[in-house]
Length: 152
Image (tube, rainbow, N blue to C red; front, top):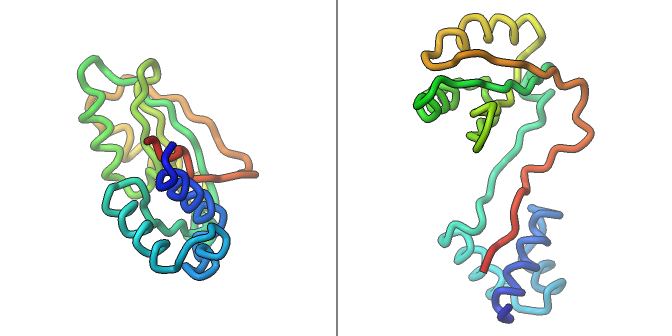
């Protein structure tokens, strides 16, 4: 791995730990200049290797009930069903799999009744869904949106 790639990896790891860390502190931690940190962050962002996001706390967003839904889809309908699911604001994540169920969805709702109403009104109306199975989330001891490292 090149020196530059190693610096990028260390920079991303530091930002994952503390996304609000100043360039000055990052430069000190990583043994480089503030200007280099700023350049690397900009380049990583332009290259699509780094994305800055904001994650609102579930409770603050009014989400007091979460569930994972396994979505079983008719043959050839996976993409259209996934697109329909992604358009719904209650769907907080949507993953297409290589097996069954074809789609995994996480849904946030105000409460259990709101979730049930959402399933019956919104999910049930999507063409191509054969069946669903739901798993109620009891608590979230860890939630991490970081899933991958930079690949060089």
